[in-house]
Length: 300
Image: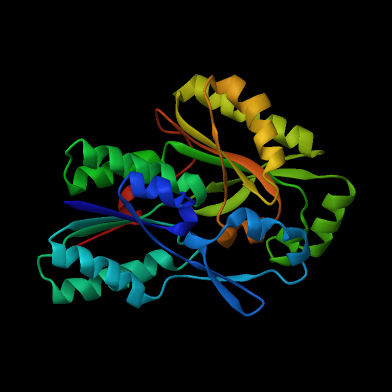
Protein backbone atom coordinates (compact mmCIF):
# COMPACT_ATOMS: atom_id res chain seq x y z
CA UNK A 1 0.00 0.00 0.00
CA UNK A 2 1.14 3.55 -0.69
CA UNK A 3 0.65 5.92 2.25
CA UNK A 4 0.34 9.56 1.14
CA UNK A 5 1.54 12.10 3.68
CA UNK A 6 1.48 15.88 3.49
CA UNK A 7 1.61 18.79 5.93
CA UNK A 8 -1.06 21.10 7.29
CA UNK A 9 0.12 24.07 5.21
CA UNK A 10 -1.52 22.36 2.23
CA UNK A 11 -4.70 23.63 3.95
CA UNK A 12 -6.73 20.48 3.25
CA UNK A 13 -9.73 20.29 5.61
CA UNK A 14 -9.52 17.31 7.97
CA UNK A 15 -12.64 15.66 6.58
CA UNK A 16 -11.35 15.96 3.01
CA UNK A 17 -7.97 14.47 3.95
CA UNK A 18 -9.70 11.58 5.71
CA UNK A 19 -12.02 10.93 2.76
CA UNK A 20 -9.01 10.67 0.43
CA UNK A 21 -6.90 8.65 2.88
CA UNK A 22 -4.25 11.36 3.16
CA UNK A 23 -2.24 11.65 6.37
CA UNK A 24 -1.53 15.21 7.52
CA UNK A 25 1.43 16.17 9.72
CA UNK A 26 0.77 19.45 11.46
CA UNK A 27 2.86 22.58 11.72
CA UNK A 28 2.31 24.94 14.62
CA UNK A 29 1.38 28.57 15.22
CA UNK A 30 2.64 30.30 18.36
CA UNK A 31 0.67 33.31 19.65
CA UNK A 32 1.14 35.02 23.00
CA UNK A 33 2.96 32.00 24.40
CA UNK A 34 0.28 29.53 23.29
CA UNK A 35 1.08 26.87 20.67
CA UNK A 36 -1.71 25.87 18.28
CA UNK A 37 -1.63 22.78 16.06
CA UNK A 38 -2.39 24.16 12.59
CA UNK A 39 -4.23 21.00 11.52
CA UNK A 40 -6.68 21.23 14.42
CA UNK A 41 -7.39 24.97 14.52
CA UNK A 42 -10.67 26.72 13.86
CA UNK A 43 -9.09 29.01 11.29
CA UNK A 44 -12.03 31.38 10.95
CA UNK A 45 -12.03 31.92 14.72
CA UNK A 46 -8.27 32.44 14.71
CA UNK A 47 -8.42 34.91 11.83
CA UNK A 48 -11.31 36.87 13.39
CA UNK A 49 -8.94 39.42 14.95
CA UNK A 50 -6.12 39.21 12.44
CA UNK A 51 -5.92 43.00 12.18
CA UNK A 52 -4.85 43.14 15.85
CA UNK A 53 -1.96 40.74 15.16
CA UNK A 54 -0.06 43.10 12.88
CA UNK A 55 2.04 44.63 15.67
CA UNK A 56 2.92 41.24 17.14
CA UNK A 57 2.67 38.68 14.34
CA UNK A 58 2.51 35.10 15.67
CA UNK A 59 5.38 32.80 14.80
CA UNK A 60 5.27 29.32 13.35
CA UNK A 61 7.25 26.12 13.77
CA UNK A 62 7.63 22.93 11.77
CA UNK A 63 6.99 19.37 12.94
CA UNK A 64 9.70 17.85 15.10
CA UNK A 65 11.84 15.10 13.64
CA UNK A 66 10.33 12.73 16.21
CA UNK A 67 6.83 13.37 14.86
CA UNK A 68 7.96 12.84 11.27
CA UNK A 69 9.82 9.68 12.21
CA UNK A 70 6.71 8.38 13.95
CA UNK A 71 4.67 8.86 10.78
CA UNK A 72 7.25 7.09 8.61
CA UNK A 73 7.92 4.35 11.18
CA UNK A 74 4.22 3.53 11.32
CA UNK A 75 4.19 3.06 7.57
CA UNK A 76 7.37 1.00 7.58
CA UNK A 77 6.08 -1.36 10.28
CA UNK A 78 2.85 -1.82 8.35
CA UNK A 79 4.80 -2.65 5.20
CA UNK A 80 3.56 0.49 3.44
CA UNK A 81 5.48 2.70 1.05
CA UNK A 82 5.37 6.46 1.64
CA UNK A 83 4.80 9.27 -0.81
CA UNK A 84 5.32 12.58 0.99
CA UNK A 85 4.46 16.00 -0.47
CA UNK A 86 5.57 18.97 1.63
CA UNK A 87 5.59 22.77 1.77
CA UNK A 88 8.25 24.52 -0.30
CA UNK A 89 11.76 24.48 1.14
CA UNK A 90 11.81 28.19 0.31
CA UNK A 91 9.13 28.72 2.94
CA UNK A 92 9.85 26.09 5.60
CA UNK A 93 12.37 23.49 6.72
CA UNK A 94 9.68 20.79 6.88
CA UNK A 95 10.86 18.96 3.77
CA UNK A 96 14.46 18.81 5.01
CA UNK A 97 13.19 17.51 8.35
CA UNK A 98 11.22 14.84 6.55
CA UNK A 99 14.34 13.75 4.65
CA UNK A 100 16.27 13.37 7.90
CA UNK A 101 13.41 11.44 9.46
CA UNK A 102 13.13 9.10 6.46
CA UNK A 103 16.84 8.32 6.57
CA UNK A 104 16.58 7.49 10.25
CA UNK A 105 13.60 5.19 9.70
CA UNK A 106 15.34 3.51 6.76
CA UNK A 107 18.32 2.71 8.98
CA UNK A 108 15.99 0.72 11.25
CA UNK A 109 13.77 -0.71 8.50
CA UNK A 110 15.86 -1.73 5.51
CA UNK A 111 12.84 -2.62 3.35
CA UNK A 112 11.23 0.81 3.83
CA UNK A 113 10.61 2.70 0.58
CA UNK A 114 9.61 6.30 0.23
CA UNK A 115 9.61 9.23 -2.15
CA UNK A 116 9.51 12.73 -0.66
CA UNK A 117 8.72 15.72 -2.86
CA UNK A 118 9.16 19.44 -2.33
CA UNK A 119 5.85 20.84 -3.63
CA UNK A 120 7.54 24.25 -4.19
CA UNK A 121 4.42 25.93 -2.81
CA UNK A 122 1.74 26.00 -0.11
CA UNK A 123 -2.03 26.08 0.31
CA UNK A 124 -3.98 24.28 -2.39
CA UNK A 125 -1.12 24.95 -4.78
CA UNK A 126 0.53 22.25 -2.63
CA UNK A 127 -2.68 20.25 -2.19
CA UNK A 128 -3.57 19.75 -5.86
CA UNK A 129 -0.47 17.60 -6.52
CA UNK A 130 -1.37 15.61 -3.40
CA UNK A 131 -4.74 14.84 -4.96
CA UNK A 132 -2.96 13.86 -8.18
CA UNK A 133 -1.06 11.32 -6.09
CA UNK A 134 -4.34 10.08 -4.61
CA UNK A 135 -5.82 9.63 -8.09
CA UNK A 136 -2.76 7.71 -9.26
CA UNK A 137 -2.65 5.51 -6.15
CA UNK A 138 -6.36 4.73 -6.38
CA UNK A 139 -5.91 3.83 -10.06
CA UNK A 140 -3.36 1.20 -9.01
CA UNK A 141 -0.15 2.99 -10.00
CA UNK A 142 3.09 2.12 -8.22
CA UNK A 143 5.12 4.49 -6.03
CA UNK A 144 7.24 5.95 -8.83
CA UNK A 145 4.24 6.52 -11.08
CA UNK A 146 2.44 8.28 -8.22
CA UNK A 147 5.50 10.48 -7.69
CA UNK A 148 5.54 11.33 -11.39
CA UNK A 149 1.89 12.38 -11.13
CA UNK A 150 2.85 14.76 -8.31
CA UNK A 151 5.58 16.38 -10.40
CA UNK A 152 3.20 16.85 -13.33
CA UNK A 153 0.72 18.43 -10.95
CA UNK A 154 3.29 20.82 -9.49
CA UNK A 155 4.05 22.15 -12.96
CA UNK A 156 0.35 22.53 -13.83
CA UNK A 157 -0.83 24.64 -10.89
CA UNK A 158 -0.91 28.33 -10.10
CA UNK A 159 -1.50 30.32 -6.90
CA UNK A 160 -2.53 33.98 -7.27
CA UNK A 161 -3.54 36.21 -4.38
CA UNK A 162 -3.75 39.85 -3.43
CA UNK A 163 -3.45 41.30 0.09
CA UNK A 164 -5.70 44.05 1.44
CA UNK A 165 -2.67 45.92 2.74
CA UNK A 166 1.12 45.73 2.49
CA UNK A 167 1.56 46.20 6.24
CA UNK A 168 1.86 42.50 7.16
CA UNK A 169 4.39 41.93 4.38
CA UNK A 170 6.38 44.88 5.68
CA UNK A 171 6.20 43.74 9.32
CA UNK A 172 7.30 40.28 8.30
CA UNK A 173 10.31 41.65 6.44
CA UNK A 174 9.00 40.67 3.00
CA UNK A 175 9.17 44.29 1.74
CA UNK A 176 10.79 47.46 3.01
CA UNK A 177 9.03 50.03 5.18
CA UNK A 178 9.25 52.77 2.58
CA UNK A 179 7.83 50.50 -0.10
CA UNK A 180 4.94 49.49 2.18
CA UNK A 181 4.18 53.10 3.09
CA UNK A 182 4.24 54.24 -0.52
CA UNK A 183 2.19 51.27 -1.64
CA UNK A 184 -0.50 51.89 0.96
CA UNK A 185 -0.60 55.61 0.20
CA UNK A 186 -1.12 55.13 -3.53
CA UNK A 187 -3.29 52.04 -3.06
CA UNK A 188 -0.75 49.77 -4.73
CA UNK A 189 -2.28 46.29 -4.82
CA UNK A 190 0.17 43.62 -5.93
CA UNK A 191 -0.84 40.22 -7.24
CA UNK A 192 1.45 37.66 -5.63
CA UNK A 193 2.31 34.15 -6.76
CA UNK A 194 4.84 31.37 -6.17
CA UNK A 195 7.61 30.57 -8.64
CA UNK A 196 10.33 27.99 -7.99
CA UNK A 197 9.21 27.72 -4.40
CA UNK A 198 9.45 31.43 -3.57
CA UNK A 199 6.72 34.03 -3.18
CA UNK A 200 7.09 36.70 -5.82
CA UNK A 201 5.16 39.55 -7.41
CA UNK A 202 3.11 38.49 -10.42
CA UNK A 203 1.73 41.97 -11.19
CA UNK A 204 1.43 45.45 -9.69
CA UNK A 205 -1.76 47.45 -10.17
CA UNK A 206 -3.19 50.54 -8.50
CA UNK A 207 -6.26 49.20 -6.68
CA UNK A 208 -7.46 45.95 -5.17
CA UNK A 209 -10.36 45.87 -7.63
CA UNK A 210 -7.85 45.89 -10.48
CA UNK A 211 -5.75 43.23 -8.72
CA UNK A 212 -8.74 40.90 -8.51
CA UNK A 213 -9.53 41.61 -12.16
CA UNK A 214 -5.93 40.74 -13.11
CA UNK A 215 -6.27 37.42 -11.27
CA UNK A 216 -9.47 36.65 -13.18
CA UNK A 217 -7.87 37.60 -16.51
CA UNK A 218 -4.94 35.29 -15.80
CA UNK A 219 -7.25 32.44 -14.82
CA UNK A 220 -9.27 32.93 -18.00
CA UNK A 221 -6.12 32.90 -20.15
CA UNK A 222 -4.79 29.76 -18.43
CA UNK A 223 -8.11 27.98 -18.93
CA UNK A 224 -8.09 28.87 -22.62
CA UNK A 225 -4.50 27.70 -23.04
CA UNK A 226 -4.39 24.68 -20.74
CA UNK A 227 -7.91 23.71 -19.63
CA UNK A 228 -9.05 23.65 -16.01
CA UNK A 229 -8.85 20.58 -13.80
CA UNK A 230 -9.51 21.91 -10.27
CA UNK A 231 -9.86 25.23 -8.51
CA UNK A 232 -10.42 26.67 -5.04
CA UNK A 233 -10.84 30.22 -3.76
CA UNK A 234 -8.53 30.94 -0.83
CA UNK A 235 -8.73 33.64 1.80
CA UNK A 236 -6.86 34.98 4.81
CA UNK A 237 -8.92 36.82 7.43
CA UNK A 238 -12.59 37.51 6.70
CA UNK A 239 -14.30 34.78 4.66
CA UNK A 240 -17.26 36.87 3.45
CA UNK A 241 -15.52 38.82 0.63
CA UNK A 242 -14.02 35.59 -0.71
CA UNK A 243 -17.43 33.90 -0.76
CA UNK A 244 -18.96 36.83 -2.63
CA UNK A 245 -16.10 36.90 -5.16
CA UNK A 246 -16.34 33.15 -5.68
CA UNK A 247 -20.08 33.20 -6.28
CA UNK A 248 -20.27 36.38 -8.36
CA UNK A 249 -17.09 36.10 -10.42
CA UNK A 250 -15.22 32.79 -10.29
CA UNK A 251 -18.12 30.33 -10.49
CA UNK A 252 -19.73 32.01 -13.54
CA UNK A 253 -16.34 31.92 -15.28
CA UNK A 254 -15.55 28.26 -14.61
CA UNK A 255 -19.14 27.00 -14.76
CA UNK A 256 -19.07 25.01 -11.54
CA UNK A 257 -19.31 25.36 -7.77
CA UNK A 258 -16.03 26.41 -6.15
CA UNK A 259 -14.94 25.68 -2.60
CA UNK A 260 -13.86 28.66 -0.49
CA UNK A 261 -11.18 27.69 2.02
CA UNK A 262 -8.82 29.49 4.43
CA UNK A 263 -5.07 29.36 3.94
CA UNK A 264 -3.02 27.97 6.80
CA UNK A 265 -1.99 30.76 9.22
CA UNK A 266 1.58 29.49 8.93
CA UNK A 267 1.48 31.31 5.58
CA UNK A 268 -1.43 33.68 6.10
CA UNK A 269 0.12 35.64 8.93
CA UNK A 270 3.01 36.71 6.69
CA UNK A 271 0.57 38.12 4.14
CA UNK A 272 -2.32 39.49 6.18
CA UNK A 273 -5.93 39.67 4.98
CA UNK A 274 -6.05 38.50 1.37
CA UNK A 275 -8.10 36.79 -1.33
CA UNK A 276 -6.84 34.53 -4.08
CA UNK A 277 -7.20 31.33 -6.05
CA UNK A 278 -5.25 28.13 -6.42
CA UNK A 279 -5.98 26.09 -9.51
CA UNK A 280 -4.65 23.19 -11.53
CA UNK A 281 -4.74 23.05 -15.30
CA UNK A 282 -4.88 20.02 -17.56
CA UNK A 283 -1.37 20.71 -18.85
CA UNK A 284 1.80 22.41 -17.66
CA UNK A 285 1.96 26.16 -17.08
CA UNK A 286 5.14 27.73 -18.42
CA UNK A 287 7.31 29.51 -15.89
CA UNK A 288 5.95 27.89 -12.71
CA UNK A 289 9.05 25.72 -12.34
CA UNK A 290 12.40 26.26 -14.05
CA UNK A 291 14.43 23.41 -12.51
CA UNK A 292 14.35 19.64 -12.99
CA UNK A 293 11.96 17.39 -11.06
CA UNK A 294 14.89 15.41 -9.63
CA UNK A 295 15.99 18.54 -7.77
CA UNK A 296 12.72 18.49 -5.78
CA UNK A 297 12.69 14.80 -4.89
CA UNK A 298 14.29 12.52 -2.31
CA UNK A 299 13.87 8.77 -2.68
CA UNK A 300 14.85 5.74 -0.61
